[in-house]
Amino acid sequence: MFLPARQSRYAVCAYGLLSLITLALTSGVEPGFAHKVKVEGDVGATLHIEPNDTPRAGEPSQTWFALTRKGGKIIPLAECNCQLSVYAEPHVAGETPLLQPTLKAVTAERYRGIPGTVINFPRPGAYQLQLSGKPSTGQGFRPFTLKFDVTVAVGSNNKTAHSQPTQPVVSTEDNKSNNWILPVIAIAFLSAGFISFFVLRRGKG
Image (cartoon, rainbow, N blue to C red; front, side, top):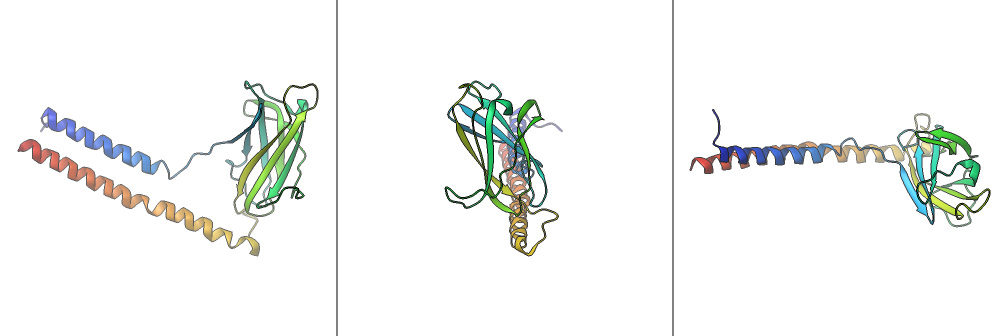
């Protein structure tokens, strides 16, 4: 049995609203990963750390920086006297870096010859990566220092006593973020049902 055109439009609107609500809620369950981008003066850099920009403590993490100058032209490591410093957060200005990995020219995605290295973060927690550089020849760009905040997760080989307090916090936050989704979706379905029922009753009246 088909609904009158007016009632059909109401039903379609209710269904569309429900679909949007469901999409908005479920899209946050599995968040996508995005590279971090920083800009200073006429130089910018995109940072990527394996895996999925979420490094794990005690595990080697492939790291690269896609350096570009204003206009989008790539700055290869051969044209940049670059240095990478890794600090455990919080830290103060002038503090000795925790790590200073050696940068090498690497090829990643569509970038060739960009600065890259392998970082082994010793513990879970917050870190800051500082990439500083100046032209190795000529005056192609101004000296720069780009700062990236990185959060390191507990690694599979990092089950030390020091890392134990961190694991429950991560698990608890994940559970809290997921537990509220199903009740809200159920409420959205019930609300859409009431709206459809009200519209149909009004159309019959």
